[in-house]
Image 1 (tube, one colour):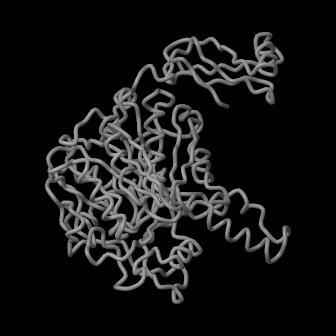
Image 2 (cartoon, helix red, strand yellow; image 1 turned 90 degrees about the vertical axis):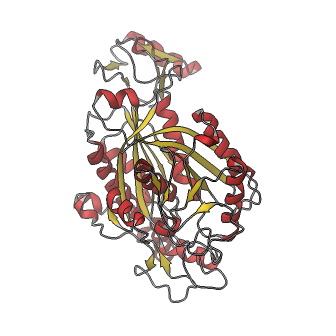
Image 3 (cartoon, rainbow, N blue to C red; image 1 turned 135 degrees about the vertical axis):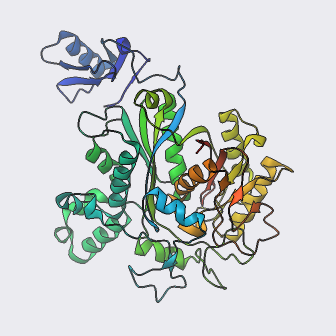
Length: 480
């Protein structure tokens, strides 16, 4: 039920649902009070319901103690207290970070479906993942591919954060998930069955997974998350859009914590459409592979994985003794005009996104130790972002890295970049740009195929989507 408060339990504004016989509000965790008022027994609730029918008025429910949820008058600091990760390097963020630090790539030949008729044959596909180890069998059969990855990543996240979840434990925790591919496998199967066999030939259980918000909803059901529940599908910028939303929720005290990040899978039809458009390496010629900022680059390689963060209000994290792995300092979003299936024609949107993130964080460009780039091996994107970074940082040389040569491109890849940078920046370096061997002189950035030393723990993470959307997040890693 939608509701908001002015920051104190004594003035809790609840939007009345006229379809239900009671009003239910969740108040602060401090006093653990839940107000339940029967519309049949309470004259006040009956009056409020009547007002809602006629004028959409809100009812005021009296309670006590300080509320977690607010209108934005108090701005909380937002810290990262947990990481859940499933990638082409296996389970957990340590496996991912160790592999990429060594210069390894998770990209390999696709074996899940036949690519013999395609120009492209590579992807960064998940390895070492058994969904049955995370999801009970009776539930597992109702989950599509992305939902399995999302729920398993969330379970790893809560274990890492040492945060109790489940019925009655997560009233103040929500989820914002970014995904490019959720529901695609179910849509393909559903439409195929409908076309071939008619309405009676399609399993009804498929339908609930044809919507892209199914993974976030299943996470909420599995872990009892009753805070905000939102899904973002902004193509390659999906996960930073979700993280930016989650930051706003926690800052404004609308939730004490938010699960956020991205989850994607390489689905056969999705892959083959990209191949048909010649968006993937090798595009029209050359050797196939992901080579950001390299003069031989000729397109990107798709990837899959689940990369989730637990964002908490710093005050709430301190109360439960949680260890922070970093802090989100600022977010920025902008856009440049672009065709639906093409990269932006100009860099202004990327420049604005970075500058907005810095402004939101109260930082100058000189305070940034490194940039985790959106560049993925697409010739125009890499050049565009290189020029945008030069615009923001001027004559200063700032270390730049792209993780797309290791984990591929997806709606979740930017979140993977955050996971990798949190550890490497805490240790005084930025991860290598896997796949970069022959730097393109037209991409005038300080990117390297090896790890680079950095000054400080603050970094920007960029994401650029086909269609022109650009996001940038300013994050500070906690010292190791």
